[in-house]
Length: 123
Image 1 (cartoon, rainbow, N blue to C red):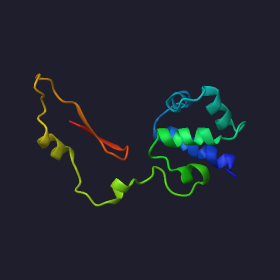
Image 2 (tube, one colour):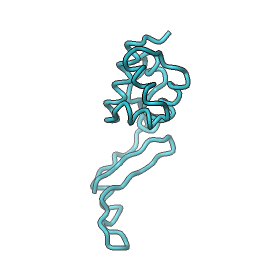
Image 3 (tube, helix red, strand yellow):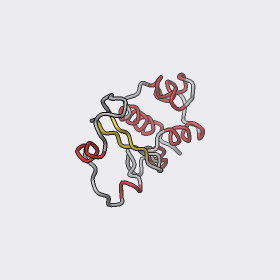
Image 4 (cartoon, rainbow, N blue to C red):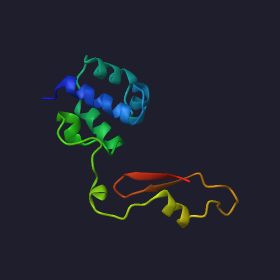
């Protein structure tokens, strides 16, 4: 059985981590805003559908951590656990010209990985 008080704390941690309001979070996982309000107030308990929407929408949220606090948040993906050379903004800058072919300055480069994670680099 999920401990509602602890679940609420973990849900609030997710909101803080992603800097989301309850309303924005509800929109992101496609549930009614009142559902989030009822969960955060302790009135309702989370449904399986709700939990799966959270885990499906936020890859850093580990199912076991969300349900019972075991594990870590944000979760460490397999890609992060394998040793890879560190990318730095300097490496990114040397790989890309700061101007594209239209003469506009590049402001940010975002790399998307096959595990759903991403890294963003300011130029």
